Length: 99
Image (tube, rainbow, N blue to C red; front, top):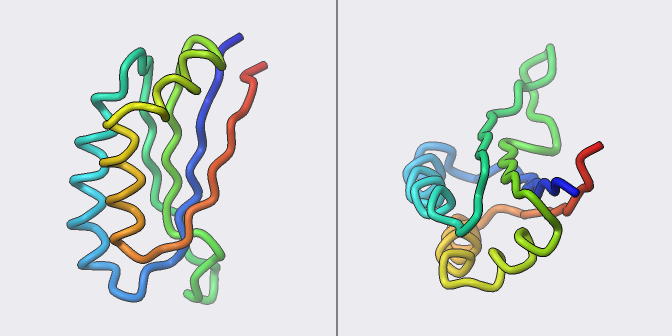
């Protein structure tokens, strides 16, 4: 079954610095083995301008759970998750079965 990994990224203390790191994270993420599609999004703030609990989302699409699981065990995952850790944001990761 097709599988999606969703990363929900919290609000950075310094959005400008975060965006520089995030550009490198995206570049690395595009090299995941067996990646079918990548979708990056920036979360809109609330209507009053205050931030939501999430700043960005990153969706990584694979043909199967096995492909997604294998991808996160590669050196590419170290670059992606290490980069996000260095950006000092909270990261919530979800594996989802695409229906």
